[in-house]
Image (cartoon, rainbow, N blue to C red):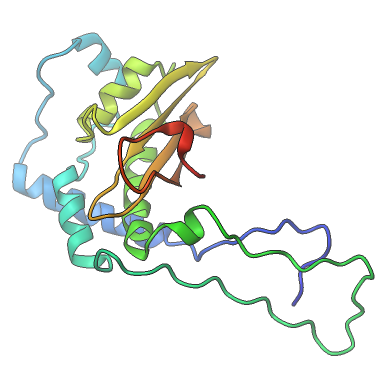
Length: 211
């Protein structure tokens, strides 16, 4: 069915949240079984770590996430899936005279990220959002601490800054020629972490990324 004139021209991929939650839970169980106990973080400001700590539940390590991506995601270089074509209007449907067919995206994550980037992004989004969504008074120091605890180094963390009650950051997750990055805004229950497109080569520049 054609969209109505007031509908936004957006492209939405099928949700995999439930599958991702199960995958991360399975990874967490494996991590707990392998370690037996949860290690405490050494070094740094203990007060910041204590306040920034999450629920205490085991979280899959970045190495485990990477291993899971290698086993389950498409090979590097796999092309993005083509956007679905709009369905034709049913016979007899009256089309408004001012109706304009929504344009499919030509830039942005839908067309510039590979299928491997999409697969990997969903896993990273899930774990980062879960770790940051319960953080009270999310200062850049606290956000950086949690990202470090998740295994993301300073080389991957960019443009970390606070604006009012929220803190914004980017994560450079480019690997194997991909262009994946994450664009995060930390604001308690309103925390949002979404995929973005990093430069194909060279240093990561937040101002050049496409959302």
